[in-house]
Image (cartoon, one colour):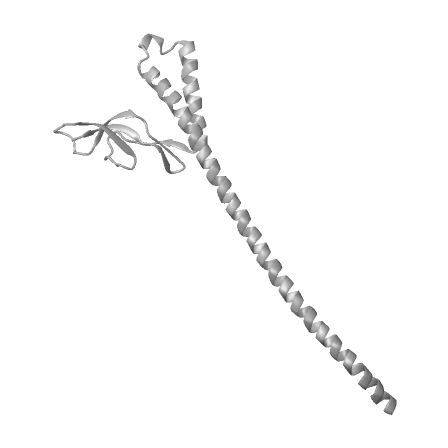
Length: 167
């Protein structure tokens, strides 16, 4: 019996030491786990931020490309308006006007849409007045003529519509 007591007394310091090491290991485990969780959250936030940045860059690049295409489209529309009746069915002219349709489709795929203006109430966020005209039969502030088409891209103003408005 005394031998058992001696063995237990010898093992108690070892047991206490092992308990301390276990507590220390558990404490380190929780520290490492918390650190890993913080780093993972930081990484996920970084990924979201990077995606938002890339999306913003794409939007601005699309805007820049659209702004370069719009003058070409404007010129094609002016040419179509001034086209004499005898040339409207000409095969070459129809081919050129097909290019206009393709440009419109390209812009639509990029999220570009025309701003409706004629007959609408003037909106300074969408329209730019180039001339005011007196008309007794029209409500003041009504747009009566579109000088240059305006466009939005993904809900943002790309180019305001230049208009004539009733005084």
